[in-house]
Length: 138
Image (cartoon, rainbow, N blue to C red; front, side, top):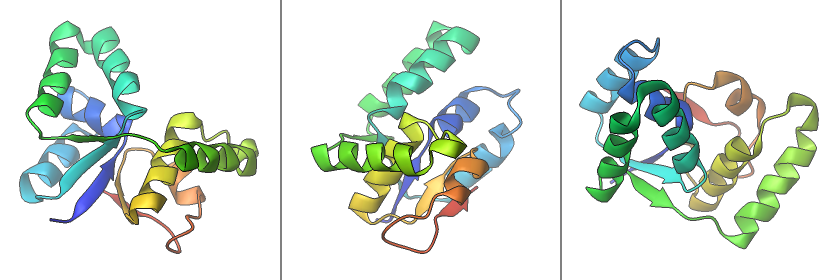
């Protein structure tokens, strides 16, 4: 089954019906069956935002999704961390941030070209090693 990398904004938008991305994300997830892969760095960031803005129930529901296997959490390797640091240095002017850099590093390692994201700015800017550019969805 094909896989797609998921960023923090998508996890938040799935839970927040008032979020401007909610309907697009919901429709995408209802009509596609890819394996959703979340770098381990994304999970605490998403949990923090869900708890802070939507409450403990929303945070727990995300964790339940992981436990049920609806979302696969991918650990980082030492090479991923080295690549993330390289990206932070290369894109210092854009201030892409550590979490986005780890998403790119992990996607490169897994040779995944598609990112499910609400962050068009950072991921459109970055040139991955394994393809000319990422396909940003939804």
